[in-house]
Amino acid sequence: MEKEFINVTEQPSNYRHLEKMTVAEILTNINAEDKAVPNAVEKIISQIEKLVNAAVDKMVMGGRLFYIGAGTSGRLGVVDASECPPTYGVPYGLVVGIIAGGEKAITQAVEFAEDNMERGWHDLKARSVCQKDVVIGIAASGRTPYVLGALRECKKEGIVTGSISCNPISPIRTVADF
Figure (cartoon, rainbow, N blue to C red):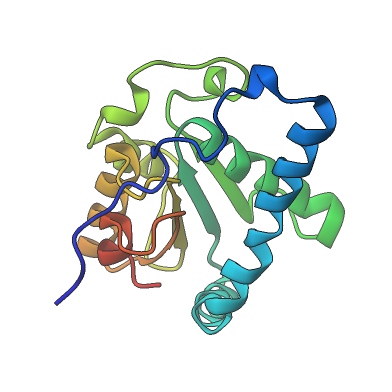
């Protein structure tokens, strides 16, 4: 039986009273937290490999890779998608980033855009998402309605899905293929 959902992204801080720390102490603590990332990634490399292989197979057959997210998660997807053409020489439009709230949300918070369960799917359909494509939902908490709704509809339509989250036992994980 799967563990109950734990919201690991909104826990009390391990670093109280930042205003009392020196700049060096703050930077050292940030660096210590950053060091946890490679270890977390190392534990799931086989899962990442499966998703990458699925995405490559779809892209070779004419499909696209979509990232869909809200807030910072959405912004990171948009940034990654925008960097793929110059970095890897792939055509623009092969990797697509979608953020809740649209282009305005890239530079400004669009409050409550992430709470709409239907809007993510609507935004994907506006870009003609289909079974040739792969959609990766990005949600730090793993429970963003915009992303969850989009992935659920993708599953109904037979579209391969993946997820990126900071929570290993989140709802997004149970919805996505990878």
